[in-house]
Each structure stands twice: as C-alpha cells, then as structure tokens.
Image (cartoon, rainbow, N blue to C red):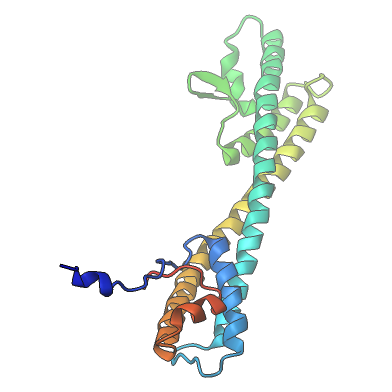
Length: 226
C-alpha cells in the first residue's frame, strides 16, 4: 500500500539566522537599509529606517575604530614589552654604580631613592605601568642625588627611557579607552540592530505570505531561523 505521506512532502527552506558577528551584522544591516528605504509599506511603530540607519552608522564607525585601535594597540604592546626588557636589563648597571659607590655597605638601603623595589624576590623597577613610570621619575632624581648623571646609564639615558615609556603608556591608555568606547557602543547598538532585523523578517513574512523566502533574499537575508 502506498504511503500517503509520500504525497504530502513539503518543500523545506534552509534554516537561516541573523548574524552574530559584528562584521556580518553590519553587512546585512546595510543591505536592509537600502531595501527598506525603497519599501514605504514596511513600517515599525517603534523605529524607522532613518533611526535604524543612524544606529548602524554609529555601530559601523565604532567597529572600524576598534579594529584600527586593536592593530595599533598590538604594536604599542610589543614596543612596551621590548622597552620593559631594556629597562630591566639597564637597571642592573645602576645597581652596579651604587655598589661601586658604597662597596662596604648593604646597597639595598639606597635602592628606594632610585625607584627600585623588591618584587617577586628581585630588586627592580616595579612591573605595574603606573608604578614603573613613577619609579622612573624617582630614578632620575636618584641619578642626580648620587652624582651618576655622566655615566653611560645616567641622566641622558634615563631621561630618554622615561620619555619613551611615558609616550607608549599614554598610547596604550588611549587605545584601551577607544576599545572600551566600542564595547559600550556595542552593548547599546548591537541588540537594537538585531531586534530591528528580526522584526523586519516577521514583517516580510506577514506582508509576503507566499513569497517571503524569496523576498528575504532580496532584502539581503541569506539565512533564517523562523
């Protein structure tokens, strides 16, 4: 006996989803903006194409800035890492200078005036960036106090090191601030954009009950979960 269900097989559309990654959301949203602008009958009571476009533009600008800053931050991080290694190596020379000045004393008592602290069982400039910057300031004062300015690793060297470290620290802080701003923008805009896209999908299904699948593709939707 012929199985009756063989005659009732329905055409299935592949399941699609709204993108979750930022780049995918931006691409889809920009396609939707173009089509929505041409479709005055597609209306939402709580937003419109102008507001949606402003939200997407803000999100895209923030996303682009974040990508640029992430690349920039990587370079700053690398430069800071190299400079910190140089500082850790060079401070040993200053410790040797102090040992030469006070050969019969426990030279560790003089370290504090040079910004040198005991950290992880080592006498060094602290690793924390803020503390290290302050320690470099102390070191410059100590260099003058102990009359080490003319040494190879004296005033000129440590002034240059201080300036380089200060600049890189400021660049890192600025990059981190820009990335934080994008995170804030993403928290505000991303859910709203996805909410709008999902609402438009439902509107298209309601307005095109027989051809909604094809219409979604016209709008730029390639996948669908509904």
